Amino acid sequence: MKKLYLLLTFIGTFSIALAQQTERIVVYREDPHDLYANMDADSTTLFYEKMVPSVKPIGVLVVMPGAGELIKETIQESGIGKLAAQKGFIVIFPSINRSIGKHIYEHAFLDTIFKQVVKAHGVGRDRFVLGGFSGGGTVALSYAEKANREPGSTFVKPRAVFSVDPPLDYTHIWKNSEKNIERGYSPVAVDESKWILGIYTTEFGGSPSQHPETYLKYSVFTYDDKDGGNAKYLLKTPVLIYTEPDILWQMENRRRDYYDLNCADISAMINLLRMKGNLQAHMMVTYNKGVRPDGQRHPHSWSIMDPAEYLDWILDRM
Image 1 (cartoon, rainbow, N blue to C red):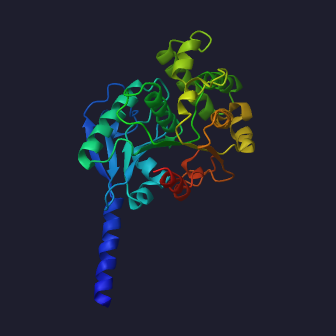
Image 2: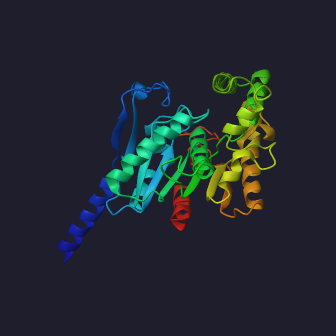
Image 3: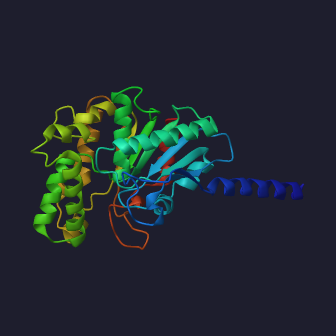
């Protein structure tokens, strides 16, 4: 009996180990729209990493990197892949890490991935949950908005979406970027802001004052619009967003104030959704949890999300 128990234990452990392995699926050999920014040798290839559970899948969890983040970093820092696979989810990590513009090509690439996953595993198109860190979370939210705004325009309609400290209002981000450059305090903030202004100028044709309707059309949320812009298309979608507004760290390291932080737009959007009846819209505010893998304190990090807590939230909505 003891030998049988040990054998079953070994089999169970082996099954879990299988669920934790990732498989790379190459979708395109070229990346003409630079969806996976030029960071490493994979930058000319579009692919996704996939974890498959050892049991019949209950759904698909899509986890997207932030701007400039590599897939291997997302898998490591999010800490959600292995746990989700053990819970019965197919976990997908798409090679998208530019993610601050119109998201037209990002959405199309995601649809290609989703078609492959449905065909390969027979999972229902109503069993997808999308999310990501920073700009990756923005892509997830914009995909859900498009699915609700234009039924049939996307391959799946997300059952729920999550995000870790995402930028939401492109007009607000443009203004904050201008302020960062004017302050000139943090080289990191200045360089990032110049990059953002360059992307927005290319994508949208200029500033928000020059093209207000374009910024309204492509922002996940617009504070100055009474309906929140595209946020009104999330009224029936469960939404969970994590943020850590460590204002003392921001003032000391970036010379930023509350008006500059993603948490301002996040709180405004979640408040709007809840006021309009979406009681499944939630904001999780953390304290002193933001830490990068090298131990550096940074409130804009994957670590502010508790993977086990988040998975419980997902399972309640499956």
